Length: 319
Image 1: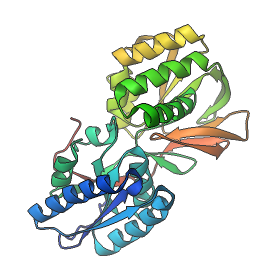
Image 2 (image 1 turned 180 degrees about the horizontal axis):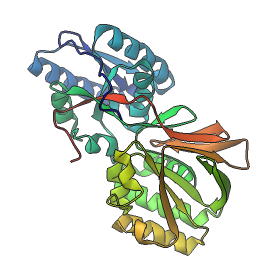
Image 3 (image 1 turned 45 degrees about the vertical axis):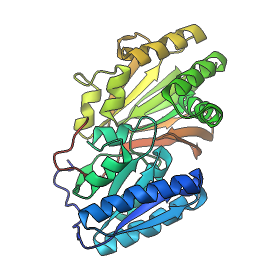
């Protein structure tokens, strides 16, 4: 579907525009600057570094994307999930090329597309990368690269960030935070789901929509069978849990950690290109790529008609 899309032309003489979240402090910012400038110098390229506060990130990303399109260059997100998503929103809307120097914990998006999770190597790879159309999903028009969800998962993310602020960023902290969240979470969502005119009512603690093969594979949702194989066919995958108690939920989390979630009878998954979800509330918390916000309902999940033009290593694929 997206292979026929014309990618924006690139001018090697045009400066790459790097968007860097400055919230982590001056010393960290200088480390990022040194990594990028070293890669630029080694490749004989030029670049512009734009450090920004989180509150200004969407505006700075929009301005940089417009400049990148006009100069036949690329805008580059340097940071974690939130920074990458904010830049992707702007780059997708503008139609310009986008690069990634990932600094997150799991880095599913970068890893899926053959981009190194080591910042210096990712910056070096970027110098030889080419724009390639990649599929993105949207929820009410908001782009997500890896996943979007409602119910339990947004609560897990909020709790995880709270614990990371206290104990540092690691997978063990994330796992511990998830266990504590499950012990206190008892809410069930009542949803009306419309898939191509077929409507059904469900009760579930969480609805998870995935656009990333690597993440789904790691928790055990098989990609060799319907539905997740559809990620290669212009669709995205939904995963829902049947109503269950706390102990059963903890058991499912352990299954996910061991990569066997898809084998559980209490897990339903299906593929779609467009789905409308109507909760009982007018606004609901929605998580996308690690960020949480409130959105008005109904929620429309779909595969975006326009791809994101990602700067990928030639022949880059999942690592």
